[in-house]
Image (cartoon, rainbow, N blue to C red; front, side, top):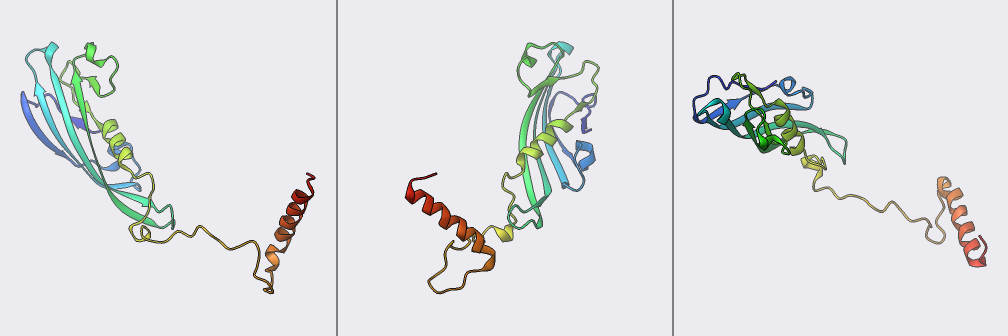
Length: 176
């Protein structure tokens, strides 16, 4: 859980720095470290029906990843930002927007753990390539099926070359 105490807030703008551990966000401690959330809150409380909390936050962390190319573990800084609006229960604003959440009447704390977790997960790169592997050439050709005239054929490929020759002979004769 990552709670923001609304009971202690006065109307106006506030900045809060939070440093949750991965367990607070429902994340594996092996996957993330050094998580920091910087939240800016705009809190309005004229009466209980018009209470609003507008939350803008950025989250920074170090993700512990495995390289897609080399399978070597590496650390990558990740960052993301998101906004949420908390409104009183029953507000028509909550109908279809997942970024609009319920602000409890009893001034209970609001939990932003799920939103921060989703922001971190979306910040992860789709292709996870270690910095030292980013400039490496990727081999896409692994050798020819035939050998130069007179070169010995590797015994491991001999049976496959026979299949290729049989396939081309069938194609030339027009039979399947």
